[in-house]
Length: 151
Image 1 (cartoon, rainbow, N blue to C red):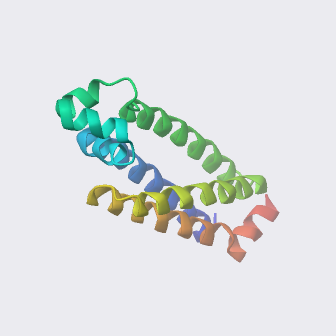
Image 2 (cartoon, one colour; image 1 turned 90 degrees about the vertical axis):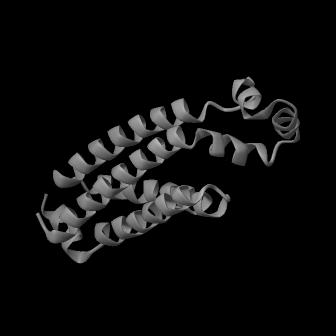
């Protein structure tokens, strides 16, 4: 297996780890996440002012960020695991799917950086962005192409 494929796999590991870190941060800083979400919602702001964070947290209109993050993480790990296995096995289509997935990942990372989230989320989003960009770089190297052609 060429170095570029191994590096692509390491990028996938970094993506899983940074995604897991994002889930952990979502749980640890759930009030900050809810407060950031509430900034764009006048009804949520009213509840926050009148009843505080506890009242807002219990409100049905507030997205359940932690369960959503956990489910998304599980799906993401499954997707990355399967696509990584197919990449190692030499299936060229896995490179195309990983590249397409990276465009979505890059969009998510840019939104994470630009959405005025707590600083820890911005750092995780920046790592996520760099890992996605490096993944695409390694997926389209000549030695990766040669490896995929042979297999």
